Figure 1 (tube, rainbow, N blue to C red):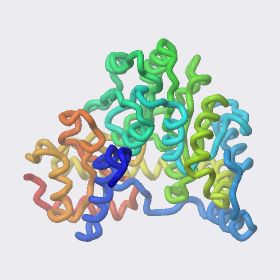
Figure 2: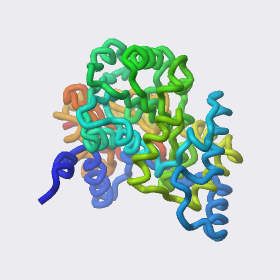
Figure 3: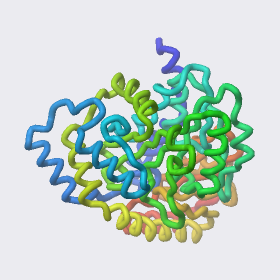
Figure 4: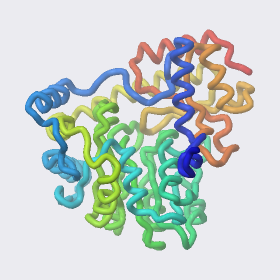
Length: 387
């Protein structure tokens, strides 16, 4: 019989990706649902990985990560944000930001503690909060603007709150929190002595807004654990090389949990990512310029077929409201879409506890080649999209 943890984890959001990907394959659909790019990152970075593979860097890396990558991450944080870090004690390499999230929650949260988290959620948050035995306290970013309500944030905090889990640039809405919104988070964290874990994997993929790391706000460096990765910024999502940075106490708590998850991974990929951060610093900016054009292409096309579109400020994703098309909810729309139009999208209601807030929202990915986006839009344009 399944254990209690397996029973608790059944039916949470990741199941929708399996379901929709299977539909895409079965129907030959254009997959505008899953967030992975069509094209790899810089060839020079791949060449570095090949050199590492052929050069014998194929055994266990140190638990905290290869020193060259930890040093490169520290230089990245200083170069972009003026954050000074000790690469030996304030940087840990993780198996993508997903493991960083898992290890942060397992290392910092006790059963029964409450975690304040932005809703709609990135899909792994719900699973990992449940795995840690914690209780989630959602603060909903509501359509159509998806902005943080400081009053709702304050109301979510109780005496049992231990941690705020923040995601900006935010998946799935594409919101980039403003400095004023981040200050509201900082004020609450300082007032209630909370730790904040910030998921910043889309830090370089912003279009109409500046990404401000929470750790740069006054009083926040000592209570913020920052997560990021090379997957999004350098288009190597399959490499699963991420990192956590912050004060040694928080990084140490994450590492204490991480050593019992993967211990270490990606030994030959870590020096390649170090090369990317140090030697290919302009690639993320060029990628963001390409993604801006693809965002605009997708959003204009979705509007043309009758959807209300929220143009995102960052990430890979745009959100539409399909209520005017007459569907009961976004899930029924998305399940019908492959057969009707040969296109796959993701119903955003699976990222919500608040059923009404997400009922008619659908997430679309624009991290695809323009020809793929155009093909998807042509299919949508010739299909019957109304219920």
